[in-house]
Length: 384
Image (cartoon, rainbow, N blue to C red; front, side, top):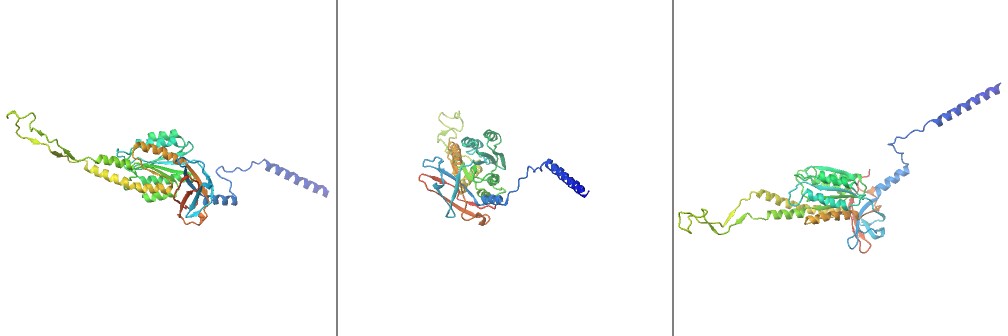
């Protein structure tokens, strides 16, 4: 009797366990929130942070003896120095560029600088860029506007240039430079380019200082290419202001009364007069002074823009004609297409750097006939 009871109890336990297992097997697996990603293992997280914080991406433009892009650049072809210390290059690669066009459409004085010319330069540049390179457009006059976010759609870019580019009375260059630096934060390091088309003259009274804006752009580690109107503007102003206010007379006698005085004998005139010269009061005098100050500002701006381009590994192009300016659009596109990205891990770890520390970069070719250009240094930024 006891054995029978034990057998029944064991049978009930087995049946209960079997039913429970079947029910659990039929329950759907828990679903992950699609916005959540599986947490990385400690090893994976350490490796990701290590790569992000310790690898420097250095944009390098390479040309041969004839000024043509050199696609054969290898690690043994160049020497990289950081603060005078040779670095071990880890890779050389080419990645699609992100090109931000920063267009000055303010202070248009209708002498040389114009929206139509700026548009034509950009069209030439876009036609020469590779199709996979992303482009964004920002214009600045009395305010700064993002006309087009990042895209590879060339038709959309052309539409924006034809419909949204417009002139203004003022120029907020520093505010435009600051927006460019902010916009580049979402793009990969080593692929950042800014093309500025301007005469460099900034209207006083802006909310951002030029020094502050440039500091942010240099920290963004972008290559800055500048096509400047400054020389063309100065030439146009000199030509406009070069006239004299003294109008020379003919020195020929004229009658005070046209046709002569009928009451006098033939050949005689009552009030002979001679036009030796006349002074025309220059009602445009104040405008001439304004143009002169503008030309001086354009000349002064050249040095600081040259410094910005050189610091970042780009070029400052100062054409003397509209035809040369259009050709420079293609030259800038060629520079962008000739860029490699050289990576190395600094011998002095970035984790040991002070916040905002600046490290000087030098680069030299190890192969005959090779010309290289890169930025002069970089700012160590805090990791995120």
